[in-house]
Structures are given as C-alpha cells and as structure tokens.
Image 1 (cartoon, rainbow, N blue to C red):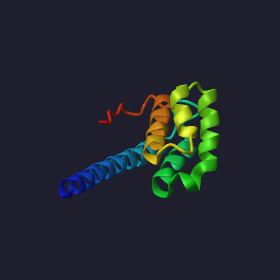
Image 2 (tube, one colour):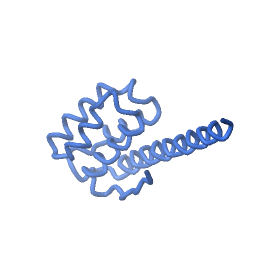
Image 3 (tube, one colour):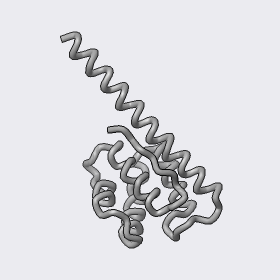
Image 4 (cartoon, rainbow, N blue to C red):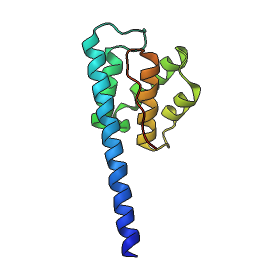
Length: 119
C-alpha cells in the first residue's frame, strides 16, 4: 500500500517535470520566433509566438479562441491532420495538446529545432 502510494507520487513528479519541460520549450520557441523577426512561412508569425507564451502561462482555457484560429490556419497550411485533431480535441489532456501545438508550430517553422520527447 505505501509502496503504491510512493510509486504514484514518483510518477506524478515525473509527469510534472515533463509538462514543465514542454512549457519551457514552448516559451523558448516563441522567443526564438520573436527574435528572428521574419518567419519562414506565413503561418508562423509573432502571433504564434504570442500564443505559445500565453498558452504556457495561462493554459488552454484562456486561449481556446486563439487555438481554434490556429487550428484553422494549420489545416490550410497542410499541418499533419492527426496533430491538428489532437490540438482541437478539448477533452484531450493539456500536455498532449501542448505537444501537438509545439509539433505543429515546429513543422510550419523550419528554423525550429527538432525536439525528442521521451514517452
């Protein structure tokens, strides 16, 4: 019983660290996008960077309208339909939606570094 509780706590801490790392990556990507001045594609603009910062700071509840706009634009620009569907799904866990957002933004911005996230 105690072992199960400690195991659960350890898994929760690992999950929180992963979420924090994902948020950090989103903010860093947004800052790089802002500093670069000119995005490589029409979709990845300062507003995408602003959305990444707002998403990391405020969560999906506060930026759902902007996410819907981003989803529409991502579909138009040919982003992976699976990732767009995950980002659009309001019932998906926040960390999964954050990763989908980051991957879509990175796929539309060829300057973004490839990031490997351990599962």
